[in-house]
Length: 303
Image 1: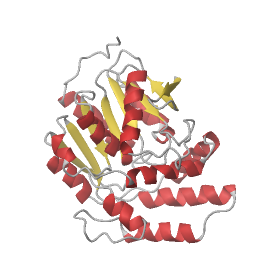
Image 2: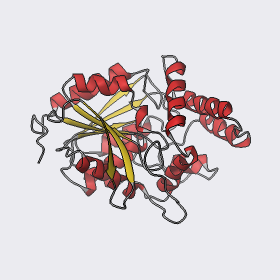
Image 3: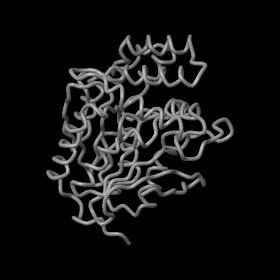
């Protein structure tokens, strides 16, 4: 069921729910520049069939959510965290499991520290406590001062080529975006080209301004790292990371797992993105983690 939620600063966020509202809730938080629909329908439906109430949403500046004039109204990761909290309150979710992919994991980390107890568990997929190596490398700046590694050269070469040869037509834009997604996959399974192409085509239809999503990069760049902040996370946390992640190599996941007090690490033979390729494994890990950490009431009691 679709529903629009109003943020503290008056924007509208598109959300969609799966399952029964009285079931234990899960909030899915997507990565930068990507819409909520990149949590595959089948993934959401499988969680709902397993007895969960699942909510996904479009960040501001993506999909059917409001776009922002970033120059006059800049925002950062704290603002995006406020948006996620607004979705929790808007759906009256009681201590949901918060599952964040990439930048969605940054938001989950901040939420756990700024709003202790709002989430019963965290699942951080392909995420990091320090986005600075990625941001510096993708902007052509030195990364030598950082402990965690920068993205792999193959991904940086793709970004450089895309910048020098920007797409000019709808078809070129679609192909460039598919090529970008292909760079994020890795490991032993083939790139799910058909599924990704379909999802990107749908995303292009749903969005009034694809370029607005690039504001997320500015929001991340304007935000501090979380290397010390994650030490304060008191929420049971599952870290899922790809052995072949070209954006945030495995040491990023290792850092989270070793520094979040109640964290455990699962490494899959994948890249940065899991969707349509490693869904079954991620579903199994999430469900198993929730069953091992029964810290919330069995029902999503709505007040």
